[in-house]
Image (cartoon, rainbow, N blue to C red; front, side, top):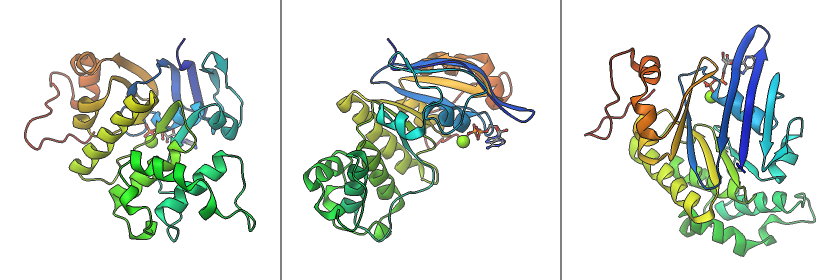
Length: 260
Ligand code: ADP
Ligand code: MG
């Protein structure tokens, strides 16, 4: 049974069909890239999977169970985590405290005057920080961190919910190519270590082709191709969307970094 199954998913915003009849599966422990030009419907698809948006039509099934109509918090508890494009850390708190806050919330304890985040599960917080390579900076305020390091903290925070599926919408937005590769390389490592599935969007084809186990391509709300990196690269419809027909992807050589 697939971890996640999305069937004939559709979303209309007034007269605009943002997502049209999209069907795909996510298997446990795979790094799956969702790509497509701006406005293709990637974020809308994410929002329907995690319950933030109600689909106009279609079905979303997690481990064989329909999650359609469930609140985002319920879906998160069932194992669907999410990172956001906008940094959501508390700047004045330390790296460790931010992860402790995320653990508090996962453990169902509200942060209050009586519950100090500082005392909550420090060992577990440090274990998560170790997994993202941020343990040595656990005591620093998040406001002092470089952008790439902040993204690692956000990743540790999303791991606090112990997701079986993590949705990452443009996790490398605003990063230089080397930083992008480092972050997605880390995500790939976590996918393998935790047998967690990750569905991510990414504009750099070099990054997608270097790390994704499988790729899904959306264009104007429609799923136009899915498969291995090799299959998707060779697909004429994908090449037509990105480069106009007749061109092929050229990646991996020199400093090429196609931002799509
Ligand atoms: P992507 O993430 O692939 O760039 P989006 O899912 O954000 O694309 O958007 C897909 C389409 O849906 C676009 O035409 C966008 O303008 C439209 N759209 C997205 N969110 C909303 C919304 N909340 N209200 C109305 N239209 C929206
Ligand atoms: Mg988007």
